[in-house]
Each structure stands twice: as structure tokens, then as C-alpha cells.
Amino acid sequence: MPATAPSARDKGIEFLRNGLFAESVTFLEQALSEDPSDVDLYIYTAYAYASLNEIDKCVETLEKAVDLAPTSAKVHYNLGVAYHKAKNLTGAKDEFKRALGLDPTYTLAKQALESIAGEQEGQTT
Image (cartoon, rainbow, N blue to C red):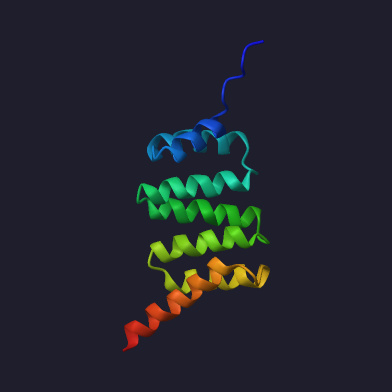
């Protein structure tokens, strides 16, 4: 029995793992067009965009993920990271707070929020 060809999702994730971000985006975008309800695909795609320093596309992709999964602390955290990369500290802080509101044990969100507080404190001194 012949092996099944890898899906666009599988190829995109494989390229992502190998650091081939432009190739990854091509396949992940194709996979999203085939299954626009796969929240993890948005996170993978956003990571690839961030790795290519396409921060606006990263943010846009994660905003779509939040629309699909508004109760996912992971998605809010990732959007917060994207906003932080985009130098939108207010947006980042809001998303980290949302992530913590959904999951008070989300250590990464707590650390990110503390980091932003430190950055803002450093700007005022």
C-alpha cells in the first residue's frame, strides 16, 4: 500500500521545524485555506511570519486566531508576544492580562506582563 502524501499542514510544520520560514508560510497558508478553523495553524503561521520579521502579518494572523478561539489563553499570550514585537506595549499588556484571566497559572504570560512593567518603568526613570 503506497504511503499517503504529506498534507500542506504537515509540510508547513516540517519546514517551520527546519527553519525554512518562507517555505513554511507557503504551505501553512495553503493549509489555512483548506481548514480555516485550525487555531494551531494560525499560531504556526504567525511564528513563521515573526521569524521572517513580518510582524504586521504575524499580528494579523494571531488576531484571526483570537476571533476563532477567544477563550484560549495560549492564543491571547501569543498575540501579546506579537504586539510586544510590534512595539504595541498597551496591546501586549492587555493580551497577557486576558491570558492570565483565562488561566491564572499561565507562567509565561505572568513573566511577560512583569517584563513589560519593567520596560515601562525603565522608560519613566
